[in-house]
Amino acid sequence: MKAIWIIALAFLSLIPEAMGQRINFIRSHYLKQDYYIPMRDGVGLFTSVYSPRDTNRQYAIMMNRSPYSIAPYGVTNYPGSLGPSEAFARHGFIFVYQDVRGRHNSEGEYIDMPGHKRHFSGPTDTDETTDASDSINWLVRHIPNNNGRVGLWGISYNGFYAAQAMIDASPYLKADSPQAPMGDEGNGDDIYHNGAFFLAANFGFYSSFWPRNVNVHFNAGTPDDYDFYLRMGPLSNAQDLCFKHLNPYWDDILKHPNYDEFWSSRALGPVMTNLIAPVLVVGGWHDTEDLAGTFKLFQAIREHGGAPAATLVMGPWSHGQWGHPGGESLGNLQFGSRTCDYFEKNIQYPFFLQALEPDPSNAVPMPVAWLFETGKNEWRQFDSWPPANAVRRSLYLSADGKVSFEPPTGKVKFDEYVSDPAKPVPVTSEIGDGMPGDYMTRDQRFAARRPDVLVYESEPLTEDMIVAGPITPVLRVSTSGTDSDFIVKLIDVYPDDTPGTRAVPFGGYQQMVRGEPFRGKFRNGLNDPQPFVRGKPAKIEFIMPDVLHDFRKGHRIMVQIQSSWFPMVDLNPQRFENIPTAKASDFQRATERVYCGGPDGTRIDVLTIPQ
Image 1 (cartoon, helix red, strand yellow):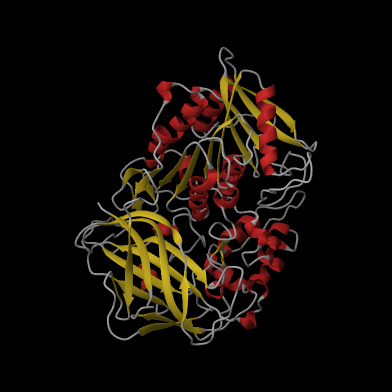
Image 2 (cartoon, one colour):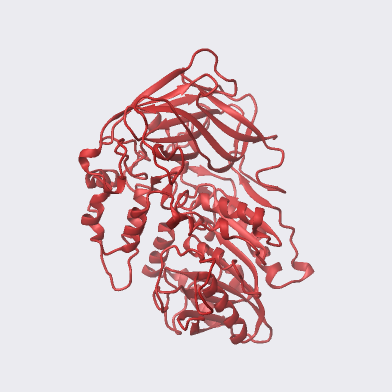
């Protein structure tokens, strides 16, 4: 969410010459009109419609619904882009942008992360599914020269609204592309990951995202986020520091640290049924914000959605990166091609064109999954995901710092470290953003050198190993406290002779392939927190989001385990507490143990496929 908000602000702050040229093109080819589209309860939703000035043919409608802003406002003010890419504007569509209920120029009451009601009290009862349907029906009936076919798309929060539009959809909806949607905020997306609160992302977002008529500007006063959040202290101090109890959205997310009805009612997967339009679900392997929701939504659509077709697209991108040209790189990684341009030309544009302007010449076969294989850096297509030929294998950790597909022999042993909330493991070694958009590509050698990070490493691989699908850590751990976090990172270690540059020495580079935290008290269920018995081993098993990564021949596989990841994840007091209200005196050091060997030893389960 945060990334899209920043992009919107950046767009409004500066209009370079190239942007001016694009604005002039749109102004000369499109007529802008504003409407208040009436909903079934009488609320008007502010909507800007850009119609081609050439009225010699009918056009499909491309729609985007947003809680951020559909600026620029005013019929004489034009944006620098229309649609998902320039190709759409040049081809010709009717483009529709709408402020969702209660935001900016739209009437009504805004609800943050609104869920689908499922049961309505009467014909005038509404939610975002009915708002989308009512809007589409009105557009088709009132906007001249439309062909009666509507496509929706959106990234991040806008992707969440695009997904909701598929539920009880208007019959005019013919294509839908939720991209990096907030599929499950309570577990896996922006807010909580396996019970751990994503501090830096949410503090940054909600300190910019306020209710109407509240105008608060917060300045951290330092470029060092690690230092800022450490000095802030317990999560409860954020109210006095920034929010002043004026932001109900911030209050809501901290009132619900457990995965309760507040979160389950907002999850998209369980309500994805009886879909009528083909779906293109898009995400990035390195999305720091809404990665899990992308997979959960896609699997729900495939399993019980009933859509006539559904395709998953995953590229080597950060959050929303595919919405811009290029895509040759992210952070230190180079991908050898313009991956965003490939997606736009070969996947997104053909998907909408064939659905909204049916013609045999537009037909493009869409696989179940169209994915970029990292490591090898090439696009691949699959007729199922995870692949039908995937084989489950276990990576076993041993107390001598090794990881292998062979189970360790001998007695159960343990490795241990001390986790100190006063000196947490940082998410990155650089000074700056506490949750950088490319942190998943950063070199992890800085973490491997800390005494509070356990490191397990394989021998060099004798052949390529392709991991395809979700990753499942199965941990056997204990703590001297009564609660602790455990962060697991699966890492690709480059050979020492890998060529690099002066800026990036890739010899020995430790590239994170996937990493996730788990808040230990939720090991028996995300709505059933239980304290640890001090020193008693316990099992933690959870699922990390999918990957398609080729560990190349000569590379090593590494696993890192730690108990803090700061300030991306909030600090755990390492005592069984309600963390949002914990006091500074509640935080304590704890000795963490990871047990290896025996039938219950720690392992990482992966799915692998042939080369």
